[in-house]
Image 1 (spheres, rainbow, N blue to C red):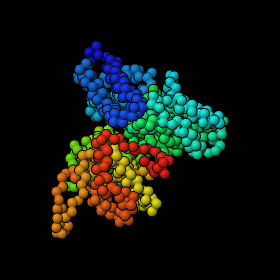
Image 2: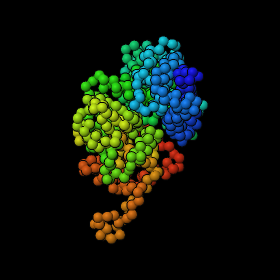
Image 3: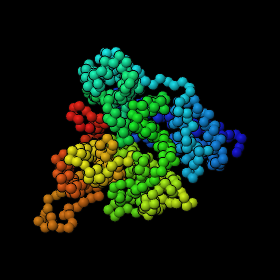
Image 4: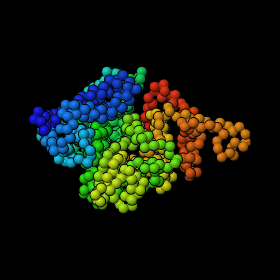
Length: 577
């Protein structure tokens, strides 16, 4: 290797690319406050999509710069990369975002090399970051001690968290907030002299909301705390709710939500703070929830290989009706499904492989409004053959031989897959549901369809098997090969028959274009069970009316960003919006 390109210089070029990415990431993120203050909701959606696309754009730019500056021949000398990694470790050791810098390095390495060369010697399969950093970190929270004066404490909080836009009626909201706080906690807690409220210093922004996030704690107990704020155009900022229930806070940080925009000087410490108030969340999901989805992917992969190394768990086919486009398998002890594209699709599916890729990548960039599962895309997964149930492996090899193969007799190569959180398929859930559970699930199923539509998403195939039920009982869509923007669909009423014989004919008496949808046809299509069909008609019969869908399309085309709330609102009588 030429002396003028030592490993340290290559490491510096990689880190320069990371700094460039981080600066653009910060610029987009920092703009969230002014977009909220000015109620710029269309720009908010555009910024969210731009920030997701930014990572791959900057990886490509850094790769190109390395190729132009160093040269491909030098870069592809794999024996050089342990030295580059060592030099890179020295460069990132004192950074506050060092764990993210490791993931960036991995992305650059994988952009240069085949996945066949992945090893811990050349890249960061396992992190080198200590769990507790010895160097000083910046304070990231504010603490408030009410000392029996809750009203005064709340007033101080909202004095500290001010905005350029005015509050609509802050005294009214503070009075309501104090009442909600007292109702949410045991009586003795509010009188405890050691009661403390700790809030993250930065406000979190997503869609049309701003969120104060923290915890309430005493010496012996703690509760998560989230206070959502809304900006109603022409009315000012309102404090919308106070949430202390861990399950509801978990839903706000759900894998079905768009990513928050929040200034986090020390990402690892903020994730640690969130993990303390949401112990049921994996850190991969928490990193992803604040926009660091590539690092979330790193943490997911590390958890997966650790699980496989330390358990006897084996991959099995996921329960439920077999898909016509995807084959889905899972690990019983790991809360994830793995989805691969089949080599041949059922005749009923009018899509090709490239279309499926486009649909799944679309889901990454749109507002999922809590109703679509986030996905992670992986290439060239390698697992020991012994980690597969024989029936599972046989089925995968039969339906997706172009994607799944055996290497050296003992390794299974998965050339491409998506991962999603595992849920109970809605059709299976309903088979075992009592009357109350069926009512709740079907009500939420209809809400899921309506909220997706409000976000300009039409699921396409709305069969029950394509929706799942989460551990919190929420209904979530997870089959994306037929989704489209709602505004691309032509909703029609079935025209009346011209003659009595029309209704008896085997073919429709009216023309049908590729994007035509007839909501009147939904009931028998969605529900074989007559009791479920009647109940859903009572709950959400408006979904069978073409005019309902056209009204949403008109609102979206006029630029209206429709409200979809990730928490229970008192005004909605307990309904999750």
